[in-house]
Image (cartoon, rainbow over all chains, first blue to last red; front, side):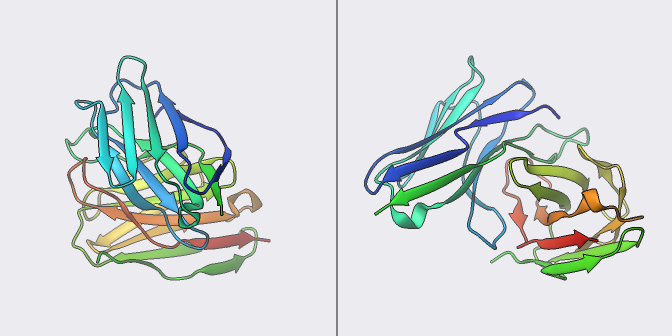
Length: 116
Length: 113
Protein backbone atom coordinates (compact mmCIF):
# COMPACT_ATOMS: atom_id res chain seq x y z
CA UNK A 1 0.00 0.00 0.00
CA UNK A 2 1.30 3.40 -0.91
CA UNK A 3 1.52 6.44 1.23
CA UNK A 4 -1.11 9.06 1.95
CA UNK A 5 0.48 12.44 2.67
CA UNK A 6 -1.31 14.70 5.13
CA UNK A 7 -0.71 18.35 6.01
CA UNK A 8 -0.36 20.30 8.18
CA UNK A 9 0.96 18.32 11.14
CA UNK A 10 -0.61 20.78 13.54
CA UNK A 11 -3.14 23.56 13.19
CA UNK A 12 -4.46 26.27 15.47
CA UNK A 13 -7.75 27.94 14.54
CA UNK A 14 -9.83 30.51 16.33
CA UNK A 15 -13.31 29.54 17.45
CA UNK A 16 -15.75 30.13 14.62
CA UNK A 17 -13.08 29.88 11.94
CA UNK A 18 -12.59 27.31 9.18
CA UNK A 19 -10.17 24.45 9.72
CA UNK A 20 -8.68 22.92 6.56
CA UNK A 21 -6.64 19.72 6.41
CA UNK A 22 -5.23 18.40 3.16
CA UNK A 23 -4.27 14.95 1.92
CA UNK A 24 -2.69 13.62 -1.26
CA UNK A 25 -2.36 10.07 -2.47
CA UNK A 26 -0.51 8.20 -5.19
CA UNK A 27 -2.25 4.86 -5.60
CA UNK A 28 -4.92 5.26 -8.28
CA UNK A 29 -6.57 2.04 -7.06
CA UNK A 30 -7.74 3.86 -3.92
CA UNK A 31 -11.46 4.42 -4.16
CA UNK A 32 -12.65 5.05 -0.62
CA UNK A 33 -11.46 8.02 1.41
CA UNK A 34 -12.56 8.32 5.05
CA UNK A 35 -11.60 10.86 7.67
CA UNK A 36 -11.19 9.78 11.28
CA UNK A 37 -11.26 11.89 14.45
CA UNK A 38 -9.36 10.81 17.52
CA UNK A 39 -9.56 12.21 21.05
CA UNK A 40 -6.84 11.48 23.64
CA UNK A 41 -7.19 8.01 25.14
CA UNK A 42 -9.71 6.92 22.54
CA UNK A 43 -9.57 5.00 19.30
CA UNK A 44 -10.21 6.82 16.01
CA UNK A 45 -13.85 7.26 15.03
CA UNK A 46 -15.17 7.73 11.51
CA UNK A 47 -16.11 11.35 10.84
CA UNK A 48 -17.04 11.41 7.16
CA UNK A 49 -16.07 9.51 4.01
CA UNK A 50 -16.21 9.99 0.24
CA UNK A 51 -15.97 7.93 -2.93
CA UNK A 52 -14.18 9.39 -5.99
CA UNK A 53 -17.34 9.60 -8.08
CA UNK A 54 -18.34 12.80 -6.24
CA UNK A 55 -16.33 15.99 -5.76
CA UNK A 56 -17.81 17.06 -2.44
CA UNK A 57 -19.65 15.61 0.51
CA UNK A 58 -21.09 17.61 3.38
CA UNK A 59 -22.30 16.43 6.76
CA UNK A 60 -23.19 19.22 9.13
CA UNK A 61 -20.12 21.41 9.66
CA UNK A 62 -17.81 18.87 8.01
CA UNK A 63 -17.11 18.83 4.27
CA UNK A 64 -14.81 16.67 2.17
CA UNK A 65 -13.61 18.13 -1.12
CA UNK A 66 -12.17 15.63 -3.59
CA UNK A 67 -10.07 16.32 -6.69
CA UNK A 68 -9.57 13.05 -8.56
CA UNK A 69 -7.29 14.45 -11.27
CA UNK A 70 -4.95 15.98 -8.69
CA UNK A 71 -5.27 12.96 -6.39
CA UNK A 72 -6.03 15.23 -3.47
CA UNK A 73 -8.78 15.52 -0.91
CA UNK A 74 -9.37 17.81 2.01
CA UNK A 75 -11.45 18.19 5.14
CA UNK A 76 -13.08 21.50 5.93
CA UNK A 77 -14.54 22.15 9.38
CA UNK A 78 -16.80 25.18 9.31
CA UNK A 79 -17.54 27.25 12.42
CA UNK A 80 -14.82 25.36 14.32
CA UNK A 81 -15.55 24.78 18.00
CA UNK A 82 -13.29 23.97 20.97
CA UNK A 83 -14.89 20.51 21.07
CA UNK A 84 -13.43 19.88 17.61
CA UNK A 85 -9.93 19.93 19.13
CA UNK A 86 -8.59 16.47 18.32
CA UNK A 87 -6.26 14.61 15.99
CA UNK A 88 -7.61 14.07 12.49
CA UNK A 89 -6.49 11.34 10.12
CA UNK A 90 -7.22 11.00 6.45
CA UNK A 91 -7.15 7.49 5.04
CA UNK A 92 -7.64 5.60 1.82
CA UNK A 93 -8.36 2.06 0.75
CA UNK A 94 -8.82 -0.04 -2.33
CA UNK A 95 -10.93 -3.11 -2.88
CA UNK A 96 -9.05 -6.14 -1.60
CA UNK A 97 -8.02 -9.11 -3.69
CA UNK A 98 -11.03 -11.02 -2.38
CA UNK A 99 -13.42 -8.31 -3.51
CA UNK A 100 -14.07 -6.96 -0.05
CA UNK A 101 -12.59 -4.33 2.20
CA UNK A 102 -8.84 -3.96 2.39
CA UNK A 103 -6.97 -2.33 5.24
CA UNK A 104 -6.77 1.44 5.45
CA UNK A 105 -3.69 3.47 4.59
CA UNK A 106 -3.57 6.44 6.95
CA UNK A 107 -1.99 9.86 6.76
CA UNK A 108 0.24 10.82 9.66
CA UNK A 109 -2.39 12.95 11.35
CA UNK A 110 -3.13 16.59 12.10
CA UNK A 111 -3.32 17.86 15.67
CA UNK A 112 -6.06 20.50 15.61
CA UNK A 113 -6.51 23.04 18.39
CA UNK A 114 -9.48 25.39 18.39
CA UNK A 115 -8.83 28.40 20.56
CA UNK A 116 -11.84 29.87 22.38
CA UNK B 1 -23.46 0.75 19.09
CA UNK B 2 -20.58 -1.27 17.75
CA UNK B 3 -18.19 -2.27 20.46
CA UNK B 4 -14.60 -3.33 19.88
CA UNK B 5 -12.98 -4.37 23.12
CA UNK B 6 -9.27 -4.75 23.62
CA UNK B 7 -8.36 -6.87 26.62
CA UNK B 8 -5.77 -4.52 28.15
CA UNK B 9 -5.34 -0.74 28.12
CA UNK B 10 -1.75 -0.94 29.34
CA UNK B 11 0.73 -3.78 29.18
CA UNK B 12 4.39 -4.02 30.17
CA UNK B 13 6.47 -6.93 28.95
CA UNK B 14 10.14 -7.83 28.70
CA UNK B 15 12.32 -8.27 25.65
CA UNK B 16 12.06 -11.77 24.24
CA UNK B 17 8.67 -12.56 25.77
CA UNK B 18 5.82 -13.88 23.66
CA UNK B 19 3.00 -11.33 23.92
CA UNK B 20 -0.68 -11.78 23.14
CA UNK B 21 -3.05 -8.87 22.47
CA UNK B 22 -6.71 -9.78 22.33
CA UNK B 23 -9.60 -8.07 20.58
CA UNK B 24 -13.30 -8.89 20.56
CA UNK B 25 -16.08 -7.31 18.48
CA UNK B 26 -19.81 -7.66 18.99
CA UNK B 27 -21.18 -6.73 15.54
CA UNK B 28 -20.68 -9.97 13.66
CA UNK B 29 -18.23 -8.19 11.32
CA UNK B 30 -16.39 -10.28 8.77
CA UNK B 31 -13.24 -8.16 8.79
CA UNK B 32 -10.89 -7.44 11.65
CA UNK B 33 -7.66 -5.43 11.64
CA UNK B 34 -4.63 -4.71 13.77
CA UNK B 35 -2.82 -1.36 13.48
CA UNK B 36 -0.05 0.22 15.45
CA UNK B 37 0.01 3.96 16.13
CA UNK B 38 3.21 5.86 16.70
CA UNK B 39 3.62 9.65 17.11
CA UNK B 40 4.28 11.32 13.79
CA UNK B 41 3.69 8.10 11.84
CA UNK B 42 -0.07 7.76 12.02
CA UNK B 43 -1.63 4.31 12.00
CA UNK B 44 0.03 1.49 10.12
CA UNK B 45 -1.65 -1.79 9.21
CA UNK B 46 -0.01 -4.90 10.66
CA UNK B 47 -2.41 -7.71 9.70
CA UNK B 48 -6.04 -8.17 8.88
CA UNK B 49 -8.49 -11.02 8.54
CA UNK B 50 -11.61 -11.28 6.40
CA UNK B 51 -12.80 -14.62 7.76
CA UNK B 52 -12.14 -17.17 10.46
CA UNK B 53 -8.70 -18.73 10.09
CA UNK B 54 -7.89 -16.34 7.23
CA UNK B 55 -5.22 -13.65 7.48
CA UNK B 56 -3.56 -11.12 5.23
CA UNK B 57 -0.32 -9.22 5.78
CA UNK B 58 -0.50 -5.46 6.05
CA UNK B 59 2.31 -2.97 5.64
CA UNK B 60 4.41 -3.93 8.66
CA UNK B 61 3.87 -7.63 9.52
CA UNK B 62 7.46 -8.44 10.48
CA UNK B 63 7.75 -9.69 14.05
CA UNK B 64 4.01 -10.24 14.38
CA UNK B 65 1.51 -12.99 13.76
CA UNK B 66 -2.24 -13.23 14.22
CA UNK B 67 -4.88 -15.76 15.07
CA UNK B 68 -8.58 -15.81 14.32
CA UNK B 69 -10.26 -18.96 15.59
CA UNK B 70 -13.68 -17.37 16.10
CA UNK B 71 -15.39 -14.66 14.08
CA UNK B 72 -15.62 -12.23 16.98
CA UNK B 73 -12.05 -12.58 18.23
CA UNK B 74 -8.76 -11.52 16.64
CA UNK B 75 -5.44 -11.90 18.42
CA UNK B 76 -2.13 -10.21 17.69
CA UNK B 77 0.96 -12.14 18.71
CA UNK B 78 4.45 -10.75 19.19
CA UNK B 79 6.56 -13.87 18.82
CA UNK B 80 9.63 -12.46 20.60
CA UNK B 81 9.00 -8.94 21.82
CA UNK B 82 11.57 -6.27 21.09
CA UNK B 83 11.87 -2.69 22.30
CA UNK B 84 10.99 -1.32 18.87
CA UNK B 85 7.55 -2.88 19.28
CA UNK B 86 6.74 -0.48 22.10
CA UNK B 87 3.67 1.27 20.71
CA UNK B 88 -0.08 1.83 20.85
CA UNK B 89 -1.91 -1.09 19.24
CA UNK B 90 -5.38 -0.56 17.81
CA UNK B 91 -7.83 -3.23 16.78
CA UNK B 92 -10.67 -2.51 14.36
CA UNK B 93 -13.56 -4.39 12.85
CA UNK B 94 -15.71 -3.74 9.79
CA UNK B 95 -18.12 -5.35 7.43
CA UNK B 96 -16.96 -7.18 4.31
CA UNK B 97 -17.80 -4.24 2.07
CA UNK B 98 -15.10 -1.69 1.44
CA UNK B 99 -17.17 1.46 1.79
CA UNK B 100 -18.29 0.71 5.32
CA UNK B 101 -16.54 2.20 8.35
CA UNK B 102 -13.97 0.44 10.43
CA UNK B 103 -14.75 0.63 14.15
CA UNK B 104 -11.80 0.93 16.50
CA UNK B 105 -11.13 -0.14 20.04
CA UNK B 106 -9.49 2.28 22.45
CA UNK B 107 -6.09 0.68 22.10
CA UNK B 108 -3.50 -1.17 24.13
CA UNK B 109 -0.40 0.77 25.08
CA UNK B 110 2.36 -1.80 25.09
CA UNK B 111 5.77 -1.15 26.60
CA UNK B 112 8.62 -3.59 26.01
CA UNK B 113 11.44 -3.21 28.52
